[in-house]
Image (cartoon, rainbow over all chains, first blue to last red; front, top):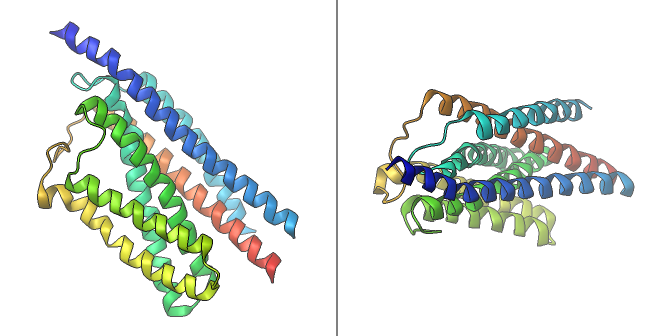
Length: 45
Length: 214
């Protein structure tokens, strides 16, 4: 039984990594968009 | 400028806290026996949801202030709150189905909490569309302030959805081990500081832009 749960844990780790990668991508894209907007508004001035 | 210093400080704290939180998520928090490693999605999924509610509350509050006072700065805070709130709503909407696929075997279930949360996303998405593509500036600011107030009314509904209508997938109460609670608290603070740093930078950029336009 414990082997069954261990196997399940190993299998579900791909969902864990995939989710954290996607959250990281969203946060990175928004950070870049803020940097770009900040630089652009400074340049326009 | 004061707001820039605040933004800088919160950003530095956010980076340190997030590095610490990720370390705890990956190496400190134990693996839950039933859901396995996928349960660890919880440590950024739930804090993202709570942080989005806080950001939407900022938008709600400043939308009321804008409608009463017509203060442009209040509108800027309301816009920034809605935008940052939407970013974290997106994090919840992306991590949730991945967790759901692993735990329930389905990407999406049309149950009260998920449905009301999707409605929340759609309302704030329309807010951003309205602000981005509207040509009449003052009118769009007024309409979006009203939209933000109405949209925020969905937040307590999302929060109470399980108690009101029940759920086939979400538990009513969550039981966590001590190490899991500690990891959750650190990751919650990490996401909250990240949200506030985004909010402050967004307001700073807005103020900077408006000053240049004057």
